[in-house]
Image (cartoon, rainbow, N blue to C red; front, side):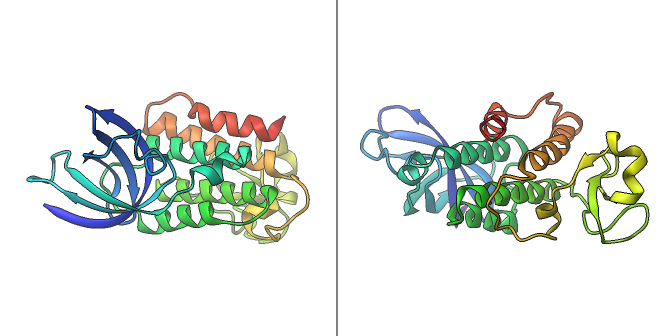
Length: 242
C-alpha cells in the first residue's frame, strides 16, 4: 500500500534514537499516524514542530498497519506562531479539536483547505479570531452538527437574526425570540455573514465562543462521550475573555 498527499503536522512522539511517530492531518486521507525513520528530533526540530505543512508519502504492507512516512516540508510555521501568542493559542485549540473529533483515515478535503487558509491568513488579531470561530462552525458542519444561521426558524425571515436556538441550532430573529431571549444563545452578526469580518473591536467574539462552544460541548458529550472541551480550547477562550 502506498499513497502521496499533503498534510499538516499535529503531534510527534520519539521512537528509539532516530525515529518519530507522527500524527498528521492530510488533504485526502484525513487524520493519519505513521512512523518516520532515520530523522532524529534533535537534528530536525524545526520540521517536527506542530503546524509544519508537509509533502508526505505513506507506505505499508497492509492498509491497517501503522506504516512509514517519508516527508518534505512545504512550510514551517513554528517561528511565526511563537511570535504571536494569540495565534499560537488559537492554533493549539485547533489542533486539540482536530485530534479529538476527526475520525482517522477519512477524507475531509474541503475542511483541510479551510484549515490551511486560516493558518495562512494575514488578518490582524481581531479579525483572525473571528475567522477562527467561523472555522469552528465549519468543523461542526463537517461532523454533522452544522448550524443553520441563514433564516429565522420561527418566521423564516433573514432580518434581525440575533439568537440561536440551543435545541435546533437554527437562527432566531429579534422579534421571534424576545420572550425567550434568556434561554437562547446570542448570534454575532459576523457569524451569519451579515457583517464584514473586518472590524476594529472584539465585539461579539465572546458571544461567538459561547455559541460554538455550546454545540462543540454537545458534540463531545453526545457523540464522543467526553464531558468537556479540550483544555487548549478553554485557554484560548480565556485569553480572549480576560
